[in-house]
Image (cartoon, rainbow, N blue to C red; front, side, top):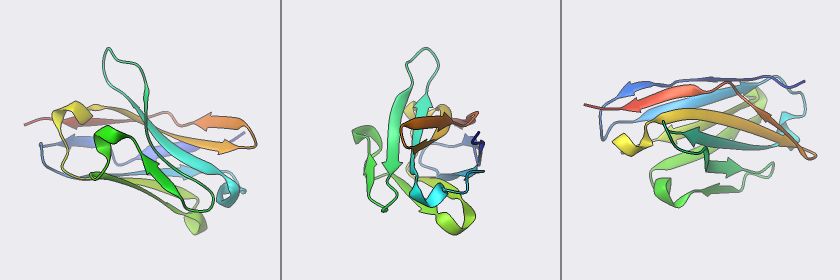
Length: 115
């Protein structure tokens, strides 16, 4: 069983920045693909960004140029650096770990963008 623990969420003003972290318990972290999803109130969960075991990254169009996903294999941690935040970015953010077809989810961390 893999445990994922997100942190770093909170309340931020529009235009501000936050960095989310997700620590994983899995020893094969370096061979796993990682991702971030979010779910806003009343909306479906949507993909935000992902990073492969080789370090290739991709981001959804609404966050491209503002959000950056990265990983630190030595710390078994994936990050989501968020800049130029907008009220539409308000959501619960979840990290995921994918390994040989199995997908694991964290419990989520709330990000609220409001003045």
